[in-house]
Amino acid sequence: MLSASRVEANIPASDLQRARTFYAEKLGLTPTRELGGEVLMYRTAGGTAFQVYRTDYAGQAGHTIAQWHVDDIEAEVHDLKAKGVTFEVYDMPGVQWDGEIASMQGMGRAAWFKDSEGNILCVDQETSAG
Image 1 (cartoon, rainbow, N blue to C red):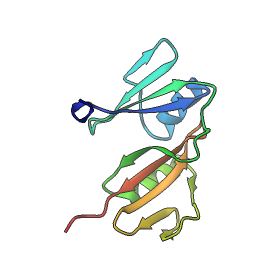
Image 2 (cartoon, rainbow, N blue to C red; image 1 turned 120 degrees about the vertical axis):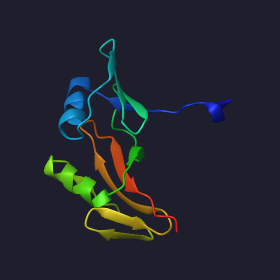
Image 3 (cartoon, rainbow, N blue to C red; image 1 turned 45 degrees about the horizontal axis):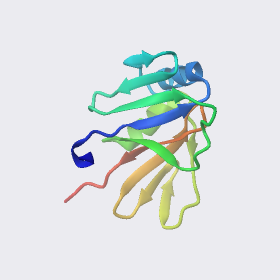
């Protein structure tokens, strides 16, 4: 059953070495494994995993393809900006912006950026229950 299975993100890259460098230098991530020079596998300390794979079709999705759930979005945005990550600001109905950080009623806050391959990634902080 799928409900008992793990799910992972697959992130496309047209240049795998460029993507490896971006994920290492900008996001502080190191692959845990490489498969045939075509796939980089990552695992976070939070217990999740994703893959970056080589394809000619990278960067074509016009939507978020992966996001990291963080405890302090301001600190994450600050740290990523210090490493040269540029954040995106989108015109979305019902969203309030404070600089690069969007607030969405009942959903929390988020900030979006593109990786070296043009993929849209996100860091978000959920609204605290209570």
